[in-house]
Image (cartoon, rainbow, N blue to C red; front, side, top):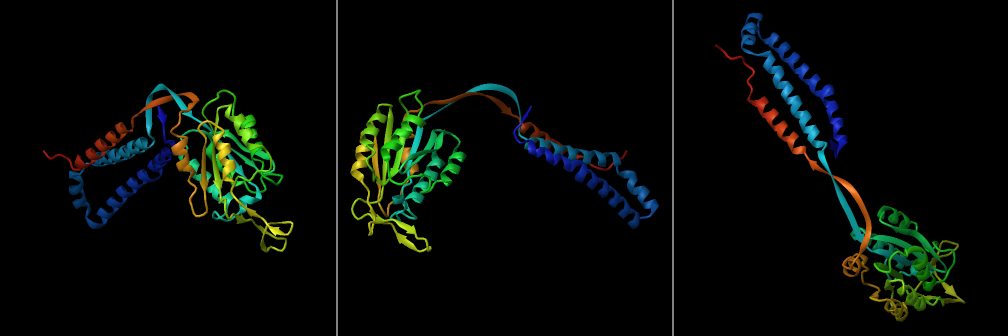
Length: 338
C-alpha cells in the first residue's frame, strides 16, 4: 500500500488520548449522575432494561468509524503499475542587460526592476521548458544554467542588480556568444530560444555578427527593447552624500535612448526572430510573449522517466466509515424484552 498523505496518521493518536478517555468519562459521569437522581431499587429496574454490552459496542463502532475516516484521509493507494512519463519543451535563455542605463525610470520602477518582474511573471506560465539567465554589461555572467527548477531561478533573479557585472558598458554581442557557447547544449540544433532584454545601446561588441553565428546553431532571438528611441531618459544615481542625482559624462547629463534599429537587426539575423518594444507607459508581458511565440512552438524531449501509478482506494474506507456510523445509530441500547 502507498499513502499519499501519511501525515494524517497522526490523527490516530486521538483514539487512545481523546476518544477512549472521553467514552470512559461519559460512562462514569452517567453512572454517577443516575446514582444521585435515583435510588438503588430504581436503578436496578432501569439497568435491567439497558444493555451495557450494546453501549460498549456502539462506542466501538464510533471509534472504528473515526479510524476509517483517518485512513481515508491518508489517501491509500495500491495496485502499482509502471507508467512512462515524457516531458517535452524548449530551452529558453534570458539575456538581461544590467548596465547602469537600466536604472532609467521611464519604465516603473526602473527598466531593470520592471524586467525582473516580467521574468517572474514568465516563470508562472512556463510549461516545463528549461530556462537560464545570463546577465551582461561590460562582461557577461551565467547567473543560472538551464534548469526546470523554477524556484532556483527565482533565487538567482532576486540577486541580480546593476552590480551583477564587474565591468561597466553594454556588450550585447559578448552576451549572445556566452549563451551560445556556454549555456545552450550541442545535442540539438533546434528548440532554442534566446530572449534579449535591453535598451539596445552597444559598445562595439558586434552583436549582429554574434546573432548570425548563433543562428547557425539553431537559436532564435526574441529581442525586447526598453525605453524610447526619441527623447530617452536620464539615469538616476545616488551620490556620496545620499542625494539623488543623474549620471553625468564630461559634465553633461547622460540620456539613454533605445536603439531599436540595432535590436531589429539582431533579432532578424536569426530564423523566426522577433523584435518587440516596450515604450514608457506600456506593459511588459513576458508571459504573453512566451505563450504566443514559444509555448506553441515544437519542443524536444527533455526528460523521460518511469513512475509508478497507483489506484486510489480511499473510497473503500469512506464507505466503511458510513456503514459503521449508520450501524451505531440503528443499534438500540436497550435489551429485547420477552
